[in-house]
Image 1: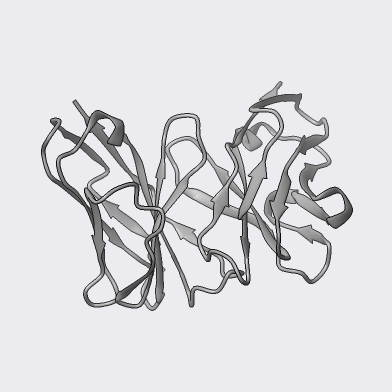
Image 2: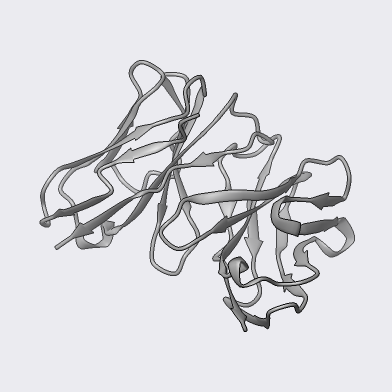
Length: 115
Length: 114
């Protein structure tokens, strides 16, 4: 079946602009995660959804970052007033029920470049 | 708090040689441990995971890892490297009472020389 998909694959924007990154999880998966991967680093957790609600948003770096999952499926990560330091690959993952032992399936990522 | 440390950001082996990628964890509660692989221009793919059943875990593509509580380690091994194993490998941890999301190490890039 279809895996996790993310759009766009690449996004170039200017400092101060607003961007939205989209994630389509595997159908039926209730848990959805956002991570950020900087060059040469492992992915860092941003936010975790269980259904429609954010169960853990402790990884969001500041209030410029926000994410929604209104119908419990597709999620959008929103970044306001982008800064050059926001440049990274943004990864989305989904898992079946969201337990700690669940396998998380990752999308290919969105590469964000802030000029 | 949970964390993982991967010793060696780059590892180079010859084709047919043993692969050993090191991962040590820190966790105040019993951990669950994962190894993911990232091929160039592809998403992260699960190799194997330890979820408190057998301490020796076998994964895909001939990889295996052993959970050693006394050493707080979960090293990844493969008896004989193939050229197709060249990739970046990430160790990660979660726990039942901690964060559901994965906490990743900084990764180890494996090169396989012909």
